[in-house]
Amino acid sequence: MKIELNQNKIYFNNGSVKKEIHPFWLRERVDGEEFLDKGTQQRLFDPTTLSSEISINTATIHEQFLEIDFNDGVKSKLNIDKLALEFSNEDTVIRSIPKIKWNSTLENIKNFEYKDGFFDSKEMYDLLVSFYKYGFVIIKNIPTEDNFIVKFANSIGSVRRTNFGEYFDVKSKPDPNDLAYTSLELSPHTDNPYRNPVPCIQLLHCIVSEVTGGLSTLVDGFTVTEDLKKENPDFYNILSEVKVRFKFIDKDVVLEDWSELIKLDDNKNFKQVRFSPRLDYVPMLDKEKLDLYYKARKKLSEMYNSEKYRIEFKLAPKDLMMMDNYRLLHGRTSYEVKEGNRFLQGCYIDYDSTEGKLRHLKRKFNI
Ligand SMILES: [Fe+2]
Image (cartoon, rainbow, N blue to C red):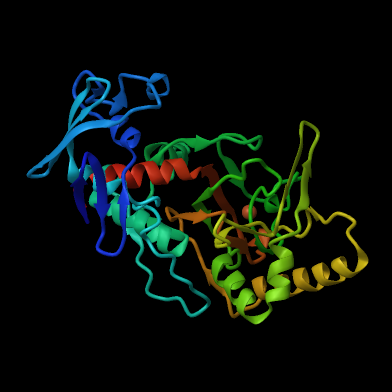
């Protein structure tokens, strides 16, 4: 990538494309000490108050600096390498981590080990990269006292509180308001599809595990929906077009949100899955459309529930699992209450927590 000058116009040239850089784009990036606060990197001026007729009187390049005199009297010296970092429209930190598709054959995934200073360590950086690759990660040796899960969440970012509280205890209890609080099998699902926004990441910490059942199950919604797209595009298309209603009620709250079961981003790529077939209600569409929708949902459910895609494992006391609730489905096998206790604690964080931490650690370790 090169910066080039021609008659007071500034161009970037990446070898295949040469484009003029808008003078205003450069003017709002002036970073002298009267224009930019060094500590916060926040502007000390409001570019929306500038004349939109900004132009360049003179421009020169000296080593790695672009020196510009603008027509409003401001002189600037901009670091070319710093400008070049901005030419991409993509989030180069998070998006550069490729999602790795996996199914039941997944093995040898690295577990992490909690220790002092963990949250600001290179190990934490590696953990977050692994999380973005696979959609989940397991950390061993997490203290089980004093609801440590909340401290864990707040040391990555901030707990996302819900009406279940700052954290929730997962054990069978009488008169439950959710099937999670029974000892029944839970088939693969995503959490809280009725919430706006849906909590991004679930943390689940095993405190006590005395039963032989109660295995954790995970399914990669990214793998399943990519396979569906290949094998049955009509099913994939309707599930990524039709918005359905998800609803939760209890005595204190009525939560409702509408979404596609497969949500795509602006580029028609995977963004999020929601799946909780006890809670979803499709609107009354034309009969032909519903015919297709119901077949598609059935197929998707069969794939999510198929052994081909599911991994099963037992969380031991002190194990903490962190999973992407927009990408993975989770569940558990049933267990027998008479055998003993099973006690997990859960809470949520959002992507700003993991993304903020990852960018911070990347900066800290100059990666
Ligand atoms: Fe759940």
